[in-house]
Image (cartoon, rainbow, N blue to C red; front, side):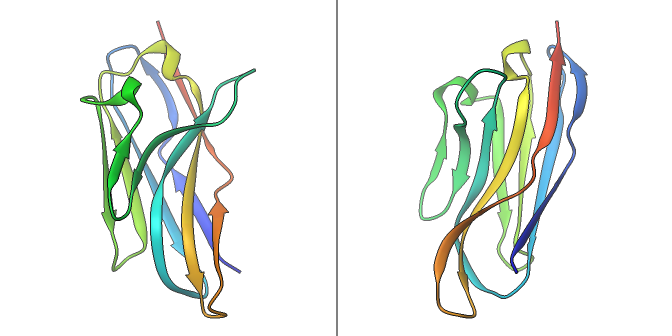
Length: 118
């Protein structure tokens, strides 16, 4: 079973920084896209940043967040700078994995809470 484990969430003041990390493990042949989504209370889950053939960022985080991958370790990090209160959400790691069964499907982590105080 493929598992994604996130770490690095927490409470930070507006203008501060946090770094999220995600590690994928299990019967993995390769990972296509890997990245981060977030869900604020009462809102739908939204893309924050992904890294695959291309790197994509939500307009709201461009210039402040940076995604980085280590393909050898199956990890992805999200460096978040200049955080804003509207960035308060549960952040989820996502990976589109090709497993040893030669099946491609998305997997999600359990999420890590990020709270930005004003």
